[in-house]
Image (cartoon, rainbow over all chains, first blue to last red; front, side, top):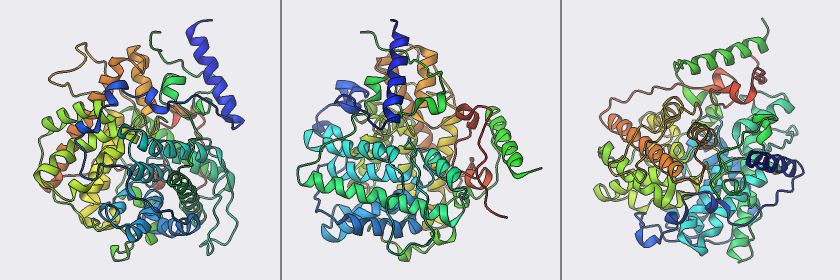
Length: 270
Length: 270
């Protein structure tokens, strides 16, 4: 069997596994993708900031309260900054620095899949900012590995879950909000599938409240995961390592854009 | 002519305009998409950090030097953090705080389109972090509007340009690096088109050097735009406002995933 056929089968298998919601891959994660050993240098070489020492101090937070904050903050700073502020606004009060110096509101640009371009959902991006700023980047060593894991797990959970799962105590929209499963971490795909099923326009109050509830749903899970990490009992769930497994950085819904003709990327020599 | 036909025509027109590299839309930008007036509240209500006052102090930087730093930093922290550090490492020296307190290395997670999922290219994300952290989010008022504009312009330029355009003085790979135009701000699409044309695998030294040069190319343009903004002569070039123009957060390459059957999103009542 030739290489292309093997890759094709792997991509098809992943789509099947994705469809059944049972992605099971190996360990290693993105490290298999990225620049390799030259990326795993000591932070002694780092040109990073004075706050580049991880993990940052963290105290366990209440997921419900955090989600309530995220829901309200969405209407001020939108999805990405809402998720960031739902955690950091509490840590600024409970811990102080370095959280007081982190410019959370600058991340309004994560809205609409980054300045409206519909790429990664700002809630996923905001969750990655929070987990990696608190726990640290993977190059910081074993104590920081779960900054990456929690971020990747959020992308997986977001893609697999019928969202939103969080309902605010005092919702701005009293009507029931339809749930949809995006099968993708992208804003365009997530919002598009919801709009198609619900029939509501992007500019509708219902769509806005749906996105505010999605941000709150993500904030709720984010704090659950951070609390587990703080307790030393967080286990990475997603082991999606596309660079290693399918030869290109990728989502798991290949056929959604490619149809039956998923390209076979050139593979490294064995 | 019914609504769906009009939307279809608009999407087709945009694809045509995109193909000819001549996107011309109105003003307004993402504000037309986002949560509307409730989002445009005074920052007096902000729960943001103590650094939430914009713009941050900025001194003009040398694009060539910045690109050289980004190229070298890619091999330490990868695309997103390389772009951020190429600017902030210089401002930490020339300005000091608040740049010293910004945890640039935490943004390693932007690699591979965010923890390897192939969404937005980390170079685009890193450029948006830099422009919005320095100039501020659009909700901070007129003095901060170009944080958003420079970020969106980068997405447009990245999509339209045959990359990489920057060649380092001392490249790690001596062979010529093939250029490709992504027509998308996504890592998966950008890297995939380059891999298809070049024939090099994701794990190849050539692919890594291509991405390091793309990060450097983005860093070069980013500092050119920031310097123009500092001189008060920056004019936003991209006015892509998909929420207003096509009714959903989106890229401009609709047919690349949807083929001839671009869905018509439900539109708001007039």
